[in-house]
Image (cartoon, rainbow over all chains, first blue to last red; front, side, top):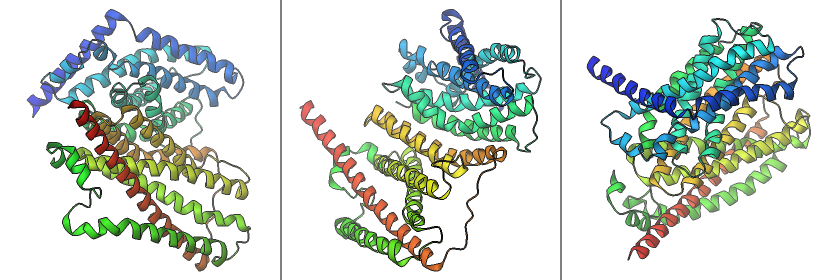
Length: 226
Length: 250
């Protein structure tokens, strides 16, 4: 049992490291995602005039919209390298559990989105002068990203099999992750200016993460099966 | 694993009834849908009578009668997605493509009925609340449900009739349905900051309840009828595709 679990993580980390090394060499995704997230924040600034007094109500939403949009960019590239080099079959022939492939891709996506967030959150805090740079933001961002990536990794595998994958991916992912978006935005708002609505927003995100992480890990094998 | 090994044409062509394929179901298969269709037509006539004449006029006015369409249509929409959910699980488990066709057919009917739910609901809301739309948990969840299953149909149209497309759709059919209660609860909580008008449900007069019940039963019959028709259509399409492939390969 322990041995198989250890093997599972070895395989997962090996595939994760492969993706990260691939990204470090080509630098296709990270830079683009981060720049895009910042652009969304700038556009939001003009769309909603975030200098005014209600910025506390609007800014957390802007931050999460930026994360979600940037995530979609990165998620769409989850299997891009495999598709472009035709190495998907080779990945599937590997004697590894499909769940390990899913976990590796999920962790890779979280790493990509995480880098974007590490850049965007301090800039966001500085640009709008909001006290989000506290320890409290870490679990919100981490759990919110996990929820988005859990659904996103699975559906990026689905969309990558279709013709119009750029169109299809957000249409599949956005409606499903609405609970995460609601929970993350509200939790961030609580952090910025506590209103004490007594709703366990972080608990909502955790419940979502647990449910969809387990369901997606099981479902992934049906999606990549050939 | 029954169908996976046998050629699809025989399974698709010889039994348009599909899932009801064992022997003693033959009369049901042959005449069932006519009986069902006839019952639906009669039920619709009774529903119109019950909704417009039998049930008493509400204090709020006649627009209240739209609930005799709205409630059954919403019920059928959720029922249809529940069928998609079950059929998708069975498809992934048994690898029998007849379950896949059932899921597809049910999703298509479900999207139509969800659209009708949203339209009739917002008509009622305009008359009753004075607004076409409020971001209430039930309305919002229905709207998100609509988005999920329109995406489901889009996915199906992009992937076509391929095994990988069918599996992908089944995954979405399962995940989409699991998501619904979570979406509902999250929107409900989200609403705690924006107090909404609550729908105060008075005790309905018995006659209205009877009319509502008739309408719900009738629309369920209609759903079953449409589902069977679509299912047979997909079965025939699959058979036609198979034949075309066979002719082209020879």
